[in-house]
Length: 130
Image (cartoon, rainbow, N blue to C red; front, side, top):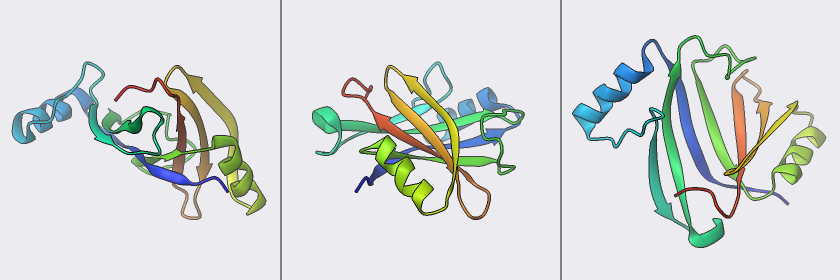
């Protein structure tokens, strides 16, 4: 059975993502990267290589990335088997999106929860950044 291994990120819409990220940097000391996100590194055996990260990232308020959800946030869960998880969800009658994405740091898939929240699933590669 495929399973969630952690939270890969918390993403939300903001009127001015760069300014908001700078506010968090200045007031909370977050180490904002050039992308405007923060990567919190941690260590865990299930992650390939034993390390991983959780991303905090504001998106532009007009982003279409969270569509078809009308919610201003999206949770990203790390999974150990993206294909297996998507199959499990489909078999349970969950609305799984057909689109998938592959990046050098992992594969992604999405589904909608019962309250209309888009949820992102991420299967990291062994070379995913920490």
